[in-house]
Image 1 (cartoon, helix red, strand yellow):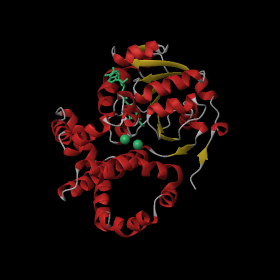
Image 2: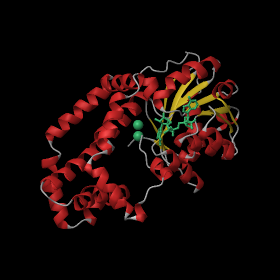
Image 3: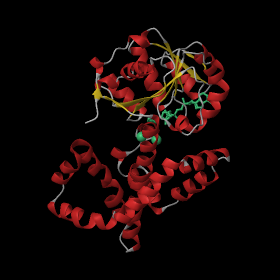
Image 4: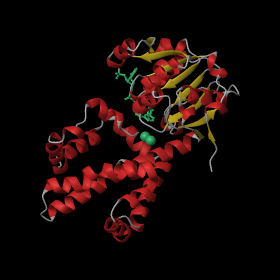
Length: 340
Ligand code: NDP
Ligand code: MG
Ligand code: MG
């Protein structure tokens, strides 16, 4: 089994003498900044003026422009949206990095796909919490933490690994477990997971099931409950006790259906498609497409987003959830449950 490090396995002194700039104060940024600060580390947040700036001020953290925050810090954690990182890095971070500083990320995309090319004289490490930012914060407040992956891309000072571990402990992950990875592994598995299984796989499975039932003449409301609403209940069981606990909880009829019909829907052919998706992630083809899409203002992203909004599944869902106040999502809650 992979080696898992916990709180007491990690020395944090190396980070105690340093100042940390957390760039961005969104889902991950606010959690990293507040957790580190409450653990006694010296933290400044780097931002532009706007919503996040106001929130950071309200939360009582020290806020400066990105350039100023980076300039006065030793460790710079970049928690901007991935597609904006190259531009902010080039114009505001890079000119203010000094030799011996550390540049850190919560996702390996921009380093692995060469969208951010750091100077050779800085450390570059990754601390990727395997949870949405709001859980990174909430579990910390409860005295626990979420698991994190750490990895080192460049070790200019000889201290990059120690720093990464101290940082992971600083945000609370020592309470849940810290595992070693590389930028390549984190990037490729994260992209594959969200595309083939978590986001792309699940949403298209739900949609195909919904369409199959409605096209056969069943009521869309019933199809919505069967194919989307109940998904959470099943996934909660898997989360708590794995596939075996889910199967223990469902009826034997459902379990028999799982065994005989599941493999007819998700079969060798599906797995072949998954391998193609993984291949596109590994070859950089997916990254290239997404980078170019952003450079031309997301025409395809926006068009598909519009089409999806008009799907019957979306419309029926809106009506049904309005009748179920207990599942009603606030904007905040929605962001909380984002998987990235
Ligand atoms: P968010 O979109 O939640 O937050 C982005 C932050 O960046 C906001 O505070 C925003 O401020 C700020 N920002 C945007 N543009 C600029 C700019 N030009 N100058 C200064 N600040 C700016 O990002 P996430 O927290 O979701 O993602 C951050 C990183 O963490 C990404 O690398 C992501 O892959 C990774 N990650 C995210 C996870 C998650 O749970 N969301 C999970 C694991 C990793 P403003 O209010 O001004 O727009
Ligand atoms: Mg992701
Ligand atoms: Mg992920």
